[in-house]
Length: 200
Image: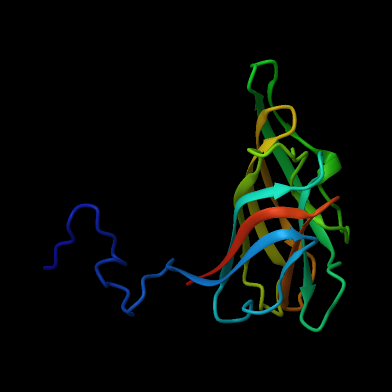
């Protein structure tokens, strides 16, 4: 009888076979902003992985109060204007303790809209201000189902607030999604890094 040591999963122990553990993340590409109007990933999103994860690291806006956003293109499409239905929650807390709240934000969701989807809002432009987080995109190469996504972004926003945005929804198409674009609602992505990972 085989014994698995404490803290070792059945995947780590090799019970499911294969040389790479399920859930392993593979770095596919990295893009670094430098006063960039957009950062777009136009390759690397295909049927190789069931899940793709974008990691945002110290994304800094050039314009005060701008929103960090994403959109997608279906295979063969252009314009980054796919139909999205989404939800948007936020929690925030001021440095001076004057405000602390959690709420649903109807002005940041979409109901079959084609605009870029907000995933973080009200960016500040001070030198020490940025946002960091993730966007998960599930099974983008499927031609049977809509494409679900989940985003969590922590933002040091204007007015010296800690804000975390929880966004989820689906890209309402059964066509494969193979391109994702990021931008701010105004101004440029002044600096920061976005990494794309594939997840087994």
